[in-house]
Image 1 (spheres, helix red, strand yellow):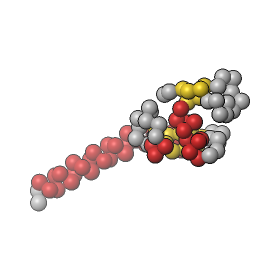
Image 2 (image 1 turned 120 degrees about the vertical axis):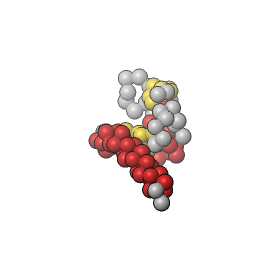
Image 3 (image 1 turned 30 degrees about the horizontal axis):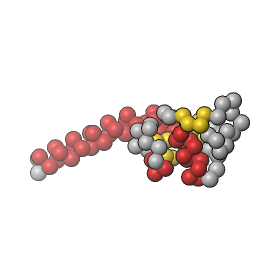
Image 4 (image 1 turned 180 degrees about the vertical axis):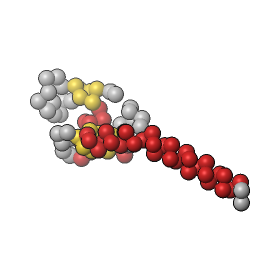
Length: 90
């Protein structure tokens, strides 16, 4: 995670360095990230700070999403395997 000097809006922080992805999201959305929110990297690559890869959401929702990801991945793997088996047997 890159931290950069935020010369535009130090936001009352003790130091003016902030996470780059938060600054990018705030500039694109023309507002400060709401309290209790996080910026999620949609593709999972934490240094890909293009705005199309960033999504602001409440921290609780983000934590739930992260908790479900391994299960969603396994479901996708099983669905792919089932599809291949059906094709092989038809």
